[in-house]
Length: 212
Image (cartoon, rainbow, N blue to C red):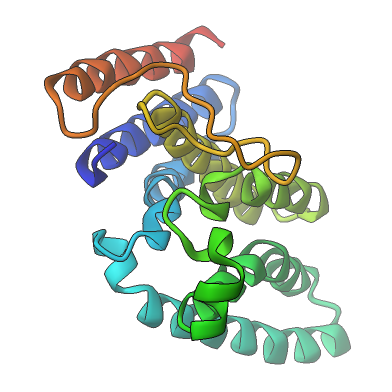
């Protein structure tokens, strides 16, 4: 689906996530309105023509810079027993490390020719590998705000995978078991069908926030 569609679905996912959290007495869930839409756009970083794909070098440098700063802060925090900073570092390492690795590989000739699946569009970034990393990261996070941000990113990322699985091309969601693309519907990207499907999906997502 198009970037605009993913953005709308990501925003709807963030709203539903926030509604769910507020209904269950967790006002911090509103942070999901930030991380969910951002993560909903992230998988298309493997697409050179997408807006986020064109900024992959900048994003890579930013992620690396944040990781370095977090490591420095972590070394200091261990001496002062500041648990929240250690949680931040662990989150960065588990979630940001594989993304950073993809960025670097996508910029090398060796990466493009030797392990094309890692760098091609609807390759490894359109599998469940990164959401699994996020899921396990949540288990290590004790600080509530970091936990909410990662959970929001998790559902936002999954919303992108689900939306692309509704298109004719589908996604290789079962990698590394198989690289076969799985498609639930045969919607053509950029078509009227996509807009109708996006409207239905947004409605369902919002309703789920009130139901569960």
